Length: 114
Image 1 (cartoon, rainbow, N blue to C red):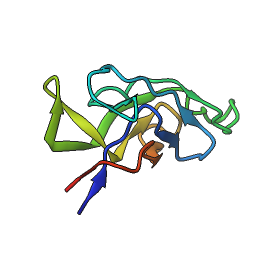
Image 2 (image 1 turned 180 degrees about the vertical axis):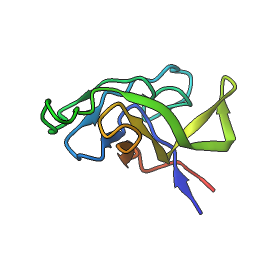
Image 3 (image 1 turned 90 degrees about the horizontal axis):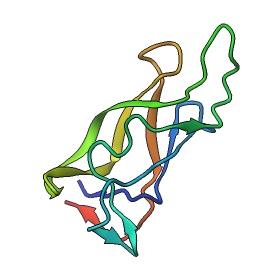
Image 4 (image 1 turned 90 degrees about the vertical axis):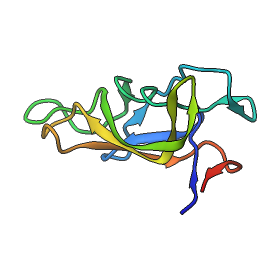
């Protein structure tokens, strides 16, 4: 199954839809249309803005935690696997261990891993 590589222009959000992850690429060597491709670690421990869950009894998603899946087994940049559109991980929102972040848009439509 073909899967798109994701770039710094990708749209990643928490399960609450409006919480958007602030993405930053750690490398600039490989780009698609001058936008860096993301590698393992680029999406973890990043800020989330706009999560609508109110403070109080619950906690809004403010940061991403470790990436759990969605890394290439074939393509690497500087010994790190590139991130794919299936990238998924947890946020620090409550309930703990139950709120994920996922990729909604890869940020490019040209390059896929087969």
